[in-house]
Length: 306
Image (tube, rainbow, N blue to C red; front, side, top):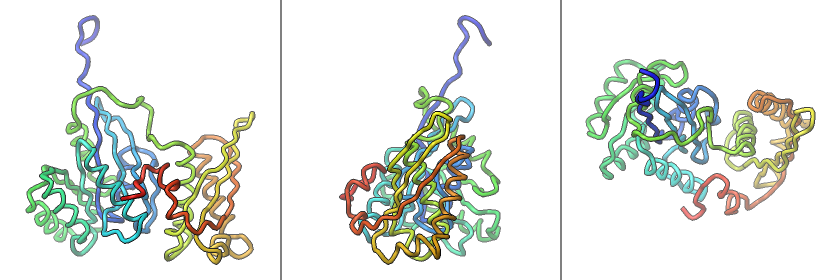
């Protein structure tokens, strides 16, 4: 029906908090739902440090996915702030989606802790068992039965965020669950993350992928300069903050090869992301107390005092 007096389609819009234990695949799932990369992904746990919004339109529904840090038992200040951000995301959301790594032989204790906290709060949720492409079917069924026995899940989906298996049904469910209301973002918006922060995250992802053990967790990246040129290209200056002087040699690598590799990979992805030529300059700076600096938490919306 069209023309004067025609009924406008019912629009829906709402926030979906994607929560789970570290390395359950939350960022991969948010990227898959949105259809493009809005959150960095690495095989290491606790890569995501703050809430990142991934925005997508599914039919007449605008679904705003909140990619949250993994929920675990935090020990340090940054970890406490990350976990607090995850629970705040769940508290603010219209829909909670609990993602569980189904490739594990047993349910992650952190995942069970999430379920128990939601149960205590009287909060319903949707369950998604992820990594079905590598999980055993008998284990999947047992895991589903165990989790559904807790009585908080309204729906259960078996998916692979990596391959896309089962995502169509999950997306249809989310589109129908968000409340009726006007869209909160322009139709072509994909994230609310400022481009300076997005650019820093791209470089931090490469550092996570190439550095080992505890070093990726001891650094942060800040975009200090953002200079567009008349020819459409862009010059970016980024600082990699580390905590100790002896970490600098590891980040730089022998003959500067590591920092060159990280810069080359980050530059290539930034050029795809920004659709322009990028001149990227990376600096490594020792800043012993950055992890205890409230100014480092503020841009990410993290609570320093969590």
